Image (cartoon, rainbow, N blue to C red; front, side, top):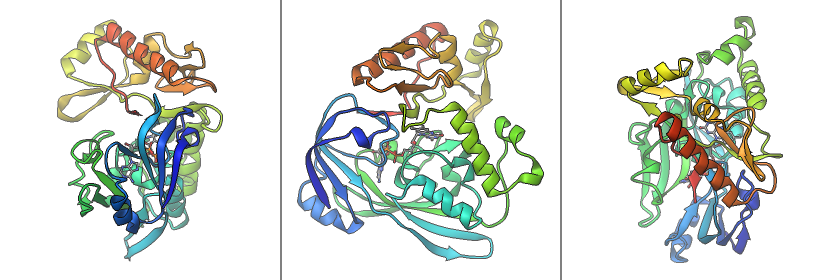
Length: 334
Ligand SMILES: Cc1cc2nc3c(=O)[nH]c(=O)nc-3n(C[C@H](O)[C@H](O)[C@H](O)COP(=O)(O)OP(=O)(O)OC[C@H]3O[C@@H](n4cnc5c(N)ncnc54)[C@H](O)[C@@H]3O)c2cc1C
């Protein structure tokens, strides 16, 4: 492991917030957990950070940031129909997709281009273009940070939901994911339910390469390039409302986009609500709402954490005033 004191987090969060932490620890191997525990590194306050693409640091972090950085993809089972792989937490997510494309493994391709690390994928059950990572997760392996007791949770035990899992609730701040196991199909199949994707791709052209390239084109046309403009992707979750509330809203806003959700509820598009509240493209200093996708809050370069907070808090208030719906951040705010 490597330990750095009073370390800048600027290069460790895609929002580009220039804050420092008291201690930054790079964990280079899962076996280091004993030594880390002996050095009291798992004693509060500590925070586990992967690629920092789903986080907003609003102030200096007065504790230890633990950055698991071990990598690797191992084949655990290889049958005629499936391959089971075990991916170390520090592996870049797009390397996992690249592995699947190179080995003709189906299931995760729609999740190409999502920044971050493999170990973070189950935490919020990443999803895009009609696919959620839970559908390919076989198990999540890790240990409890207080007792160092290892765990291996099946997909069901992970309690996956929309941008949600046990790692955001019971196991939040108590567990370190070391590996994620994915069961991938060798049988050619695609999920093309997302309209923009279905419109762009022809059946004769279908392959893992064409699907991933098409998704990257769509993503690049809507989302900022994080090498130039800081952000953490969708800042808010899409709100899920009861059907009667949705019908009331339709009388005032007949063009509301909606999707069916579990238990007869209706999921609305947070980006559309933000746009209707007048925030698309609006700025406060160097912070603002991205003009091409209102769900994304951006740092145009020199935004302070206060400015980003001002923008997202005002968005919440304005959307609530117009729709009586309180948006919840998808991003972790620290
Ligand atoms: C431009 C852009 C586009 C995006 N598009 C999408 C999208 O389409 N769909 C989507 O779902 N998300 C999207 N995201 C959000 C983000 O990329 C994902 O949530 C990603 O999985 C975060 O990975 P990370 O390694 O950067 O996580 P981090 O931000 O470092 O951490 C995220 C959470 O996981 C926890 N965590 C990380 N590693 C571990 C570990 N080893 N053990 C336990 N807990 C851990 C952290 O404590 C934190 O709570 C986007 C972000 C950006 C910037």
